[in-house]
Image: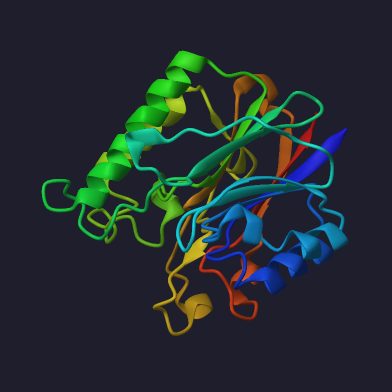
Amino acid sequence: MPFTLATWNINSVRLREPIVCKLLEEEGPDILCLQECKSPVEKIPMERFKALGYHHMVARGQKGYNGVAILSKAPIEDMGEMDFAGLGHARHVAARLDNGVVIHNFYVPAGGDVPDRAVNEKFGQKLDYLTEMRDWFRDEQMTRSILVGDLNIAPREDDVWSHKKLLKVVSHTPEEVEQLGQTQEAGAWVDITRKDIPDGQLYSWWSYRARDWDAADKGRRLDHVWATPDIANAGHNSRILRAARGWEKPSDHAPVFATFDL
C-alpha cells in the first residue's frame, strides 16, 4: 500500500499547532515527521492531532530546544534513538511501520555562525555528529529504511540561492557538504527529492530576516528525504510545499513530501 510522508522543521510544535493542524487537514500525509519541536513529549498537543486521525506518535523531546516526533495515522513501533556526539539532545528517533519499513527522523545541529571548529564549538559538534552518523550507517548497513529531517546542509549548488556567496556560510561550506556526502554514501542513501526533481533551484528554508522572503527567494534546501537503495525506486511524487512558508506565524522551513509504494 502506498503511503505519503512529510518532514517539517516546525520551530515549536506548541506555538505552531494551528499550522500543523492546517497541514494535516489540507494535505493529509499518512506520516508527518517534525523537527525542532521544542517541547517535552508529554506536552506535544496530541489531542488535536488525534482528532484529525493521527492517533500514533513516537517522539523524543526536551523543554525549549530540539525535539523530534513522528505522527502517524497507522500504528508505529518505537525503534529508539541515537545520541550522536554525546550531546544529550533530542535529535533522532526511529519508528517501524507495519510493513517493516523503518523511518529515521533527524535534526542535525545547525552549527552556529562561524565555519571554524577552533573558534565555534557548535560547528565542531555538527561535524562530529555527522561523523558518528556516517560510522553508524556504515556499521548497520540498513535496509528498507527511510531517513528524513532537517539535516541543516544544502549540498548541491542548486540547493542554495547563490553557491558563490554561500561557500563560507554555515550550511553550504565545502567541509559540511563533504561530510554530508560521506554520511549519505556510508548508508548508500538515495536522495529521493532530487531523484524526482533532478534539475533546478530547490529550497525548503527561507530566513526570517528577509522582509519579503518570497520576493527575495534567498532559500536553501536544508530538509531531506532519503531512502535505502532497496526501496528507493518506490519513492516518487516529491514536492516542497512552499506555500506553508507564508502561512500565519510560519516556521522558516517548508514541509517536504514524498510518496512510497510499499
